[in-house]
Each structure stands twice: as structure tokens, then as C-alpha cells.
Image (tube, rainbow, N blue to C red; front, side, top):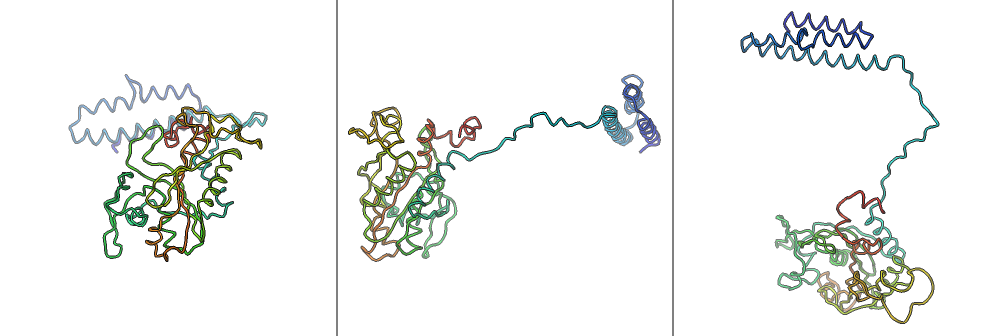
Length: 359
């Protein structure tokens, strides 16, 4: 630092140390930074008369001095402003209510479903979101040439793994029906379990569809298991979720990993003419009156299910015809939309605080 700048800095600091008045501080600012005769301002103006090397050197030093003095001025001004003040706390003033977070609507529904299944003896298991082609398709009776693969537009990954000396593609799971291929291979019946998580499909989004959404899959395997057991299980689930008067019915469908396959429909809770809660019997007419939510049918599609296909047992290495069981898949997002009357599935995944604070 040049001698003149060093002297100017020391003088400025000395004057600031003895300053105790805001008026004196304002005069100090004019003395050193005034546009016409400010001492540091004049130093900066004189740079144009220096050669390039000296201008860079002196300019950098002058800028450092300027920044340091302004920092000390701000600190001194704050000290003058706070001088003589005593800290005072008014204990009569209401405190600020803290902003607390809360569980997402999907989390609330998932926990409610878990509680219902656990009350019926189902274990809750975790499954990987990145799956292999074998567990996601082949072990569920969906070989490479099967037309059912066209129903699931899949996100494939670049990586593969080796299974039985063959390349096995990796992908983002398209359903949680993989619970069947994993648990049947790992455990010996009887057992029952459900799994919750996200699934991924390459499809266009709209009010009822998302490429990523939350789902639940359940599996029960043992001896002499029938469709009656499946109906009793799902009836109890929907009663716990939507009330004791809820109705369900079965409709023939097709899934490659169940046979027979059935869809489960629930009486529309939006246009039903009976209360969801209470003990009065329902009228003879079944379902709801018909509205825009249920497509004027009075019924809502809720579950894909059926008796586990013999081929699935075969891939898991089970003896033929020794065990029977059922599987079912439920969209957790669909249940949340119905419980909370949410018109668009995309609202559940957009993190809009105005929407989330309603639950």
C-alpha cells in the first residue's frame, strides 16, 4: 500500500474511533467521499494521470481502503443508533404461531390403507423401484412376445444385469405386481403381504392419468383360497376407507398374471342416495344415481384383481396345483382423489402449498 493511502486510512480510522454523533459522522462521509473535495474521491480521480501499471496497483489499494472505511462507517452508524437503548421484552404480546408441516394427502391415505391391511393380517413390504424385465414381466406370465406388454409403455434403463447367464434388462417398474414374483420366489406359503410405492409408465398426463403415480399391490397365498376370500378382503378394506355402507361388485376382466381376473367396482360415493356412515340398510337399487365422476354408471373402477395364475407359481418353482391365492392392485392416488374429492390427479404431485394446506 502506498504511503499516502496508508496515511489516509489510519487518519480515517482514528477519526471514526472518536466519533459518537451522527451529525459528525455525516461530515466525516463528506470529508472522505464528497463528490467535489472528498479525500478518497480525489485519490481515485488522480488515477487517470498514472501509467497503466501504477493505475492497476494504486487503484486496487484505493478500492480496498474504500471498502474497509465504508464497512466501518456502517458499523459506527449502527452503534450510534443503538447507543443508550435497553433491550425490552413485552411478555404480554402474543407470540408468533410457528408454521408446522403436516402429512401429504397421499401419505395419509397410504397409512390408512396400511392400517386396514395390517388389521387383516397382511405384512407391509418394500420393493425396489428399479426392476428387471424378468420380475416385472416374464415371471408374471408376460413373455417378450405377449400382447399385454403393449398395455404398459415402459421406461427402460441403459443398464442390464445377468440372470441365468442371460442379459436381463433393467427398467422402472410399471406396476407393483412384482410383489408376486418376488415373494413367491422368496417365501414358503401361507403368507399375505401388501406393498406401496410409485410406478412409472410412459403415457400422456391428464386429469385422471400421470406417468408417475402411487399404487398398492397385495398378495395372499395358501391352500384352498378362493374368490370369496378376495371379495371379503376387499370389502373390509373399502368399508374401513369409505364407511360401512359402501358396496363393491366384481366384473370379469383380463390380467396375464391372474386367472380368473376380475375388476372391482365400488358404488359411487358422490351420487349415492345413502349416507356413507350409519347402520341403515341400502335401498334395493345398487350403486349411485349416476354423475360425471362415475360416468353416469353409478360405479367406480377401483381394483384390478384375480386368482394368481398357475404360470406364476410355475416360474416361482412351486409344485403344480399345491397352492392357490389371489392378488390385487389399487391406485393409492385414485383412493385419495375420491376420499378428498380431488378433481385432478396432477394436483397431488405439484407441491402447490395452497392445495396441500387443505389436508
